[in-house]
Length: 274
Length: 261
Picture 1 (cartoon, rainbow over the protein chains, first blue to last red):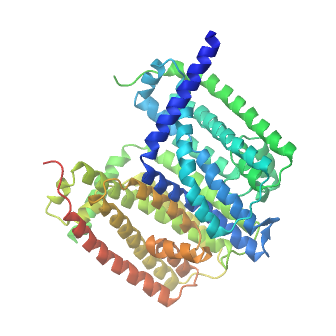
Picture 2: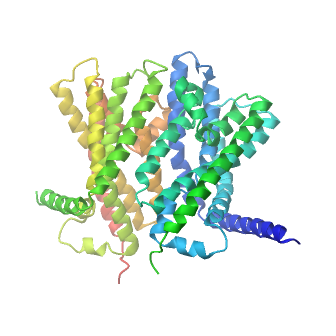
Picture 3: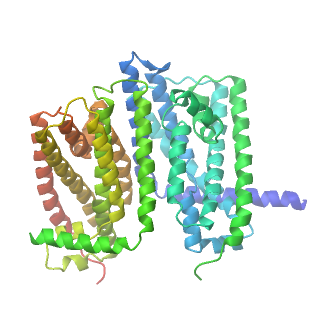
């Protein structure tokens, strides 16, 4: 076996083991995870209720989006939102403040792999626990959802694309913590921007034209609106596959930004603690 | 009276402690500004597609939002830090220190902590509220304003009771953090008048988590749409809940055995 293949294999092994241990660890805290999942439901339910109310006042639709489509959008939203939960800049802040990074740097593997594999394992747990919640929401809000096989396939890939985009984006942002330990203000500013321009608040077609054009230039909508739209909306095959390519584009760009920032950041790092 | 003086003393002490960290003020200010700006954008977006939301105009919803932000500030400044400390103390067995003091234990655990910078939200919420009130079609009378302040105070009491009820659960179940997280999520529903929610959810945010009494009812007072029966129910509910909370606290306390021994 060549050295290259051996390296790849050890990466795969690492991801499998790390993912599996995370699955086992998190299944132990089922109740905690459930509480958390239910707490997260308030946000989409509020949006859904507000837009359903407006749609009903206007004879059943807002800009062509019917109440059933709103319901489908926000139910799928709950899954995509969960895929968007990744290691945040607060995590980096903690890593640096507590000197945890020192240990991570000693390992022969970039700490990013630990984050990606670990959170991916946790995603599997949330996915399984999410299913009953989705069923209840389905009964409560009566969504209209009729995806083709291709749409389901693209969606299944796109949620993982979304996961990677958001991981790389927040990891890149997390590099700021090497210079300041007060990342919270910057982070919340980005989250607010993301809320508006990703489709988390409303389906993007409801935003003003200029906001939609702005969203086109940013990575946010590819990690949120696109996966939902792929399943709920009526995209052509070209748009579906093009969307996946855009996701790949942003993953590559953000990874490059992260790695560039990492090179400078890690030079600044001086360990705290023992 | 003694209780009030004690609460004031703790407040002063906690504030002095926090005033050392002045940079936190600016961080908090920025966060508050971002939160308010986002809320305003959301509202503008909603009203770009409609003129009224289930009978509520844009200025009226600004009022609701202002109250939600303001009350959220009150919760995060005093109620939440105290309840968090209570839960930690129960877990670590440090509650003994509070219980052995010659003062009412419920009062003590409710006033020990203060996060003064978070009060920024009280002011930004107040600003949004004032902006909303200025945009209302009809002027707000003195009676309406007084009623509003009174109901807001009762609303704050209701929220406090709710938190203490949950925090007291720590005597039985050690890990109540997740329930707190749950509250953070559910509190967001207070941004909108409860009348827009479907019946099952409306019931939940009225009685299970008393957000309707704390936010929507005061908002109804200041937008002159309050019925006297609603006001009476809100006040009665707050008083009953307070009495129950007092009993519940003592009941829970009997379960506490300390861990330091």
